[in-house]
Length: 282
Image 1: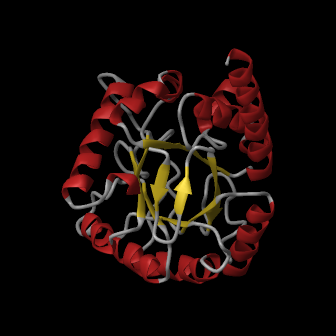
Image 2: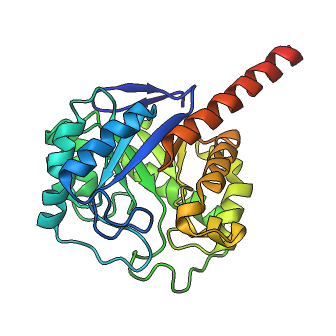
């Protein structure tokens, strides 16, 4: 797919898109509470756009390993003011949520994309998104729930199992009347997976292309990068950017990141080198 149809925008995926993360939570693994205040989160949205983010992804529930879910009312209180501001900024806005009531409220505000780590499995979620008729969706693979997902991740073959799950959820979405160009798929790096599982998903990422849907990947600051490099969360920018470029090189069309400016620059270089290679071999 070269286009991602969303509520207000048809996003051209021929150029890889950079999705900037805005965590409106007190307990995010990577930016723990820095943007929990609505005004700080709004300012961060604007800062990410100055860094050339293509899409803003705003979430009010931390999905870090061991995280406890907020109540729906609390999640709404965190994100609604930020979403209301973000939709005025002229770029596609995504809400990172699994709660149908939050999805409905966000779509009513004009939010373009539902990004769901539970792949629309909660009762009513698929129906909310299908009823909108145009909103984009990202279906994410996660084994288990954030509170326990890292206790003992187990797969027959992590890559094959992720592909099977995402294909099945995509098919349910299609059967619910959601057009294929509205759907992107995310293998869920770090969501119920060991270091070995995550690295296998990167090494074999091209296998996800068999599903025929565009792929979104989020490696930014993940613990696997810490294991590989020995770096704490605040020192994983280089590894995060490298992982994003590798993901794009292996077929991802959207990368979800904290370090927008560095990722944008790296992808500019990747595109320039790719175009040069194409011209040389023509």
